[in-house]
Image (cartoon, rainbow, N blue to C red):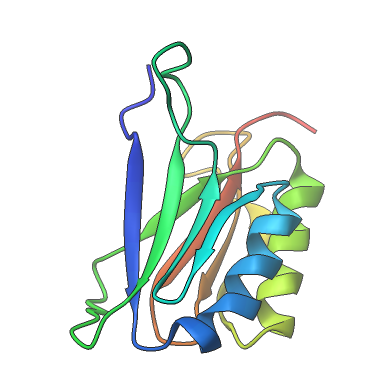
Length: 131
């Protein structure tokens, strides 16, 4: 069972966030579902028939919080997607927080990559499948 229906990330500038999040979500094969003056949305929104989807919202906020303990992890279906997420993030203003690779201390097939977005939000992509 999926625990989260949707999650929101706050940033001080949606215009500066757009290229980064467009790139990393595209690398994971995630569609943009809306692009508003103060918000971006990615994923698939739930409806009355299909309630198993999830969606990410990126909101512009003057009170954006970048606490080091906050962390968002996005699922990838392949290790290549994890690597593409990482490369796209670095190419669009992200900073390294852990290159793509196995993290066997989580489990034998945990393949993840970690980034800071251009504002300091900690994000990750992970593939749980064996190569």
